[in-house]
Image (cartoon, rainbow, N blue to C red; front, top):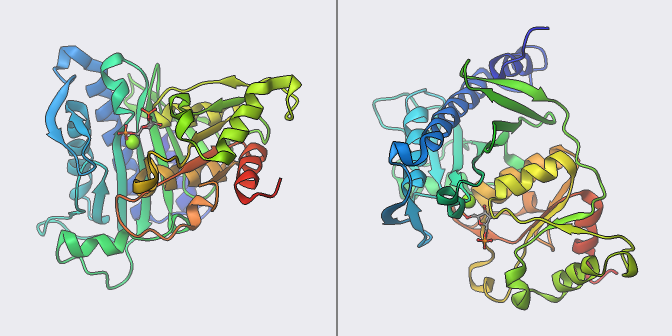
Length: 339
Ligand code: AHM
Ligand code: MG
């Protein structure tokens, strides 16, 4: 049977199902090509001179790696000319990036974390790109980058597409346009993403959890209770033994959950309270929540469904608890004091 490329999948979603527009198809193809370019740059590693610090900080005060900056530039360059976008926003940029006047303006907004898992770049562990697509509200003020921020402040339920690329032993693109979750594998010789899995479903139960245990002393009581119960294993209240995994690249941790289930937590803790959480809502939590829900999982802050949050600012941070539905519901229930 003929291979189903990303282009073919998107064409079928547009033509046969009417799920996406031609412009959204084009946008996703462009993002996928940018991810291929990022994958090639990462693959060269030290030989391409792309490892190490960029010598600058981003808006969140984090030191940027050369590959953070390069990946951001690749995504900006790839997307600004096509006429499908009104503006872009990124973890690596303080303000939105407007489409330059010399190009036509489209109806979509794109947000991304160009290279997630920065601490893993120099140690050759999986990293990724996360993106989310929204529609630009009618009459939005895009006259300046400052004014454009308001157009992005839409709840996750408004997303029309979301995805991530994982740069691991293989490069994968995991995508939703609101019609389930599909996985594409990059065929490096052909330079094409080929469909490798459809209708991804996350098992509702799991025996695997992901959390940075070094933060244990800062956790809130519901998370401490839940993790303590998991650690108690078969003899504890949950009655089964759990395993722990923490890659410290959200894309890789989420992809493991997409593949075999699990629960991922970057919860609120006393250290993060002032900033609201660790992970960013617009280009980390929301796209991952959309993907996880589309695969039958759940995503909450512990207190609220992530996709229902009304964003207040572009770089807002939120607590994240996502993955296998029954486990996410259990720990969310602990927060509500229901059990
Ligand atoms: P980044 O976007 O700057 O790479 O930060 C996000 C990453 C996530 O990929 C990962 O889950 C988390 O930060 C790891 O944090 P920690 O180093 O505290 O374990
Ligand atoms: Mg990130």
